[in-house]
Image (cartoon, rainbow, N blue to C red):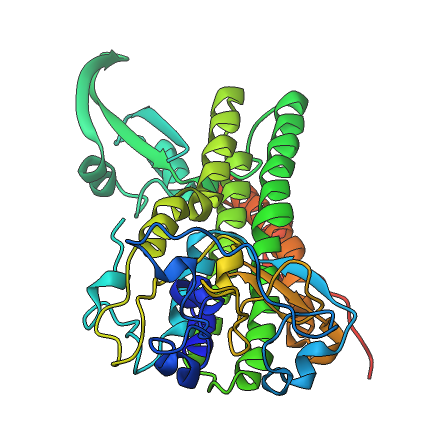
Length: 411
């Protein structure tokens, strides 16, 4: 069905509400009762939104034919929830809604879905003939071998000096220290406090906004797997569940790298600017989603089967015309519902009304993802600090694994 096809993917998420089943869609050209004939399917006409929909019986929802409304959709109580309007959610909707008779999610077959959109530097002056100085640089990892030849190949001749009546060539060794080598390696109490504040800032953004989007998308995935079969649709493109997982992995990487970079700098200005940069990176999905949604909401699906009206890829806003035809009749087979209805369905492509107890909530099993987003960045900070300390003092006792003690558990 058209409605089912739309619901699965980001692109069709908006189209879902305005579409009925294939049977309704094919007759809709001759009969004005189809869910395809709505405001979103009329790009050229200036028809007004239907204002007098028919309500034929005393149900807490609208319908033309009660037999076309599955009983499972009426089991309350209901609540509304939405998914974030970012590129991950949009891509998910487009992928889930793609069906063979509507459109392909592959950009090679359907170009419409393609929317191209060192912490420290130091200079060291060294006499490569001084074996003690060369050995010290090798111990710090700045030279590959503790030899004069290795020193002269890595450093550049700078100037000559007179040392106790002998001319000595001094060399310049320029090195760059990666951020993961400098975690908590320097800084006073003020710098440490600033690092903590900036890390908290970045994490609050990632957890309270971006991770919340991941959970909402996983919740939407559970709803779609229950809702599509009730509308006579096959659940397709199950690989779309990978999209919120990829989003989560990106957020986890951003959090870990931002923490390490913030804790590696010791200049307050650098710490603050890097925290701002990582905050923006975490929001990229939302920033670039607006032009994507605008484009897909104004692009018609091409090469539809005969009998299908004009349909857009997305319908991101709630409209009465999503569920009501031009003549005021209700689209019983459609995916979209009206605000006042007590029935499960789509209010828009990004808003859902449902009863959480009516279907399995598989997303709750992903509780470990929430635990990981707290634990993994903290572990990486501790590991980075240990690595940086041992790089500076490789002979320290705590830097040798054989001296580390781990708790033992007797079974």
